[in-house]
Length: 516
Image (spheres, rainbow, N blue to C red):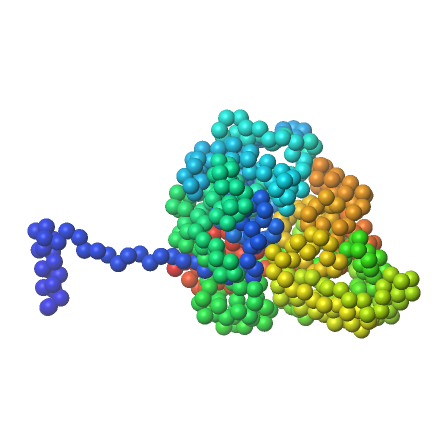
């Protein structure tokens, strides 16, 4: 009866106007905590060199077109529509007129022009510059129309424009603060606003309530770099993070059996490979590269290291991405053959190209799978009198070493389902990511043709030529694995789907990830 009287009393006070408002409990802030295998090197789209920067930047910046929901088909984003001329040399994009940057400046065509020209500007040394080489000039037509004029038809242009490394920046703001300062405090139009970046600790974003697609369902996103996969597994298991990636196979299996978390696996678009210098001896001698190929039991090593999270690769072009030449490339893989390895090494020593006790480093990232395969390679080569040392470095230290020709390295690549992205960046002599310094006119010509041809069949012929020459004759790289993508999330995460490129797409035209 006591409770009845209290309720009745409240009703009387309310009717008399004595109680005007009874405060409700404040809504709990929705925070999403994401574990990343590596900290981004950069967040300025012009400077971003790899997937970790792209994964964060994709939530701060928007691009003209989007591939977030369909990795092979562009959909409107900042551009509401576009036209392509019959000769394939003029692209006209019509921008949305209701988009604002996080600093409240309105997006216009001059911002798009500024961003793309910044990527193309040699002075900025953008890793994405190669993807815009065919663009001759860019012009605006009023505030909301942008036109790209090409030197030649260029089939992968839409992919370049939809990459997170082509996120549109506010021109006036960047000019005011400078490109470098912008990198540490980026401003975009995307669903989340940059808050802070504490190196080796966290990157924090907050929701953009005025986002043109939809108001984000999450209030705050915290990206935490966690390079050790066993720590990543412990964090997702204890609730320290809500999304985990790049876990060890044994942890994935254990977490899946326990059933307390969501474990999602899809076919990925990422690889790992062993690369050699084309210009620095003894790596530059194809016999040395073949000797290493024969010396290491790659099949067994890859199966043991990537069990459950990847499959042996024989080419740079994944299955499902044209052209399909897997069987031929597989036939060119060299088997584990100790006698053949010894024969090649002895030839090189006899000719003075290789010295007994030759010491060198195998450079790689802190990715645990790559460190393990590098260790296997180093261990096997000691049997032939070679003293290889594994140097596992963070990206900011590793990237300059690779650009300056490291000699021998294990790296990887992830991209979109078009062969240009899997070959031009890695094998063209003019590319900043051609860490092997591989340089052949016939390779450059084939890669340039692959970009300018329209027919998939004709384009495919060029990429087959590149792969067969670079990997099946010169053995400039030893392909290792195409990895699958496994993401583990808490049961409280709704709407999240893994990306083949290891991105975190939180708000798109079809989804709005939330924390329950």
